[in-house]
Figure 1 (cartoon, helix red, strand yellow):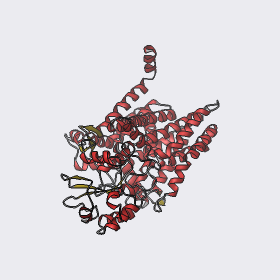
Figure 2: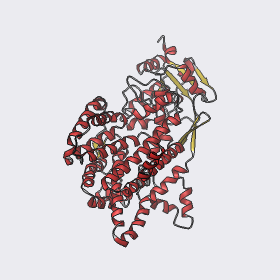
Figure 3: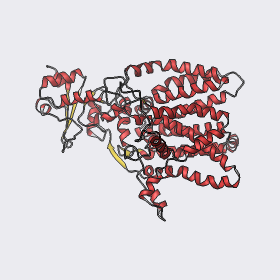
Figure 4: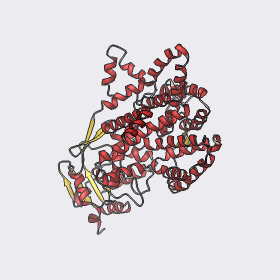
Length: 550
């Protein structure tokens, strides 16, 4: 057995090294941005905002009861519009006894490692070169943007440059949030924040790899494998609906180009579509009127042709040249693959699927991941072009990964924010032990609410989260203001009961949070307290007990 294992490793040395590296790097990346110490969560400061949405979703499955139907715990009352399946798995792992950091990080790390492997496999197969596969993985980890220009504006080249890069803790450009042109979505921060993203992209790349291989086989397809792929496609909308759309665009285009694989593609897409139909219907029925719309130029502030071109020059860097060059030099399968992914770039620049156009980053991320396989192939071709090619390729390669290298260290050097968790957190402990698991709380704070940490739902979480998914946060905010500001107990109780609110949480902060509606004295004067934490000036009221006779 050992002799066979060593023989296999020797035969597949490149793949063994890549697998080992991908697992080691992925586990480091995920555990370095989210960990646990002394019954407290430690969340990297560059990840805390997204975790403000994901932790409540995980806890709604592990500590709460969020089924039949599954709802968004920061906007209860409607079926969930968010892709929840990844966080459901995490919640189940925590529910059966795995601590939340292990539950989330192990699944995240395995997903990210699988993505790296899938990039290698697809690039290696298309271009028949392990070198292209390895470089494609490197280009994935270290983005090719020109954000290094912003870095050198702050830190001009000097003898201290290497030290300044290694000690840096701020992204040089984090557009559009810092007003700069290079987007925040191309560095590794997107995968440490959106832990659910790596797995569906890996699934998409592996399906492309399978279809392309199938197109060159003369024997009949294995129908058991086709059924398995169809089933996986069917659950993809629950894992990531955007990737589901991309899959049908890419695989549907390959259907036109790969006659030998058409039967396999047809059955996979047909079965997947049938299984996904309930989710599609639900999302269609709950679609926001501000959803699909024409929107030119993605996040470019200048919507002229030259303005959009400049935006992508800054965001793609040398890839804006190397990707087309790789396409021209690519073999037939490579050209077919590129044509199938090109619509993703066009869609990302022409359409808006949600109120927040920045959400289009997923279309562009997939395009860039596959597009940089062509960049890697172009560099390999140049390298083989006598001595001149070798002289050109080395500086080009360094420029391709310079911004990504600089962007790596703000993640490595990040600090943590601490969230005291159950059972050390007294407020969370009381809620877990004294309220039904499917309770809804009217909240007076947004982020890391004790009810959210306890797996309960809150009436309105940070509005940005629900708004970006297409929920009517304006109406919910109006109701929240009306209830919290009410001076009439009967009116307040009617509104609480109409909106199926079980508990009211009031935490008075000084100065008052301007994002929270003004709170009247009605609750402190006419409602009996069920729980009180004087240290935090926090009180909780039971709606049923206080409104039973109204």
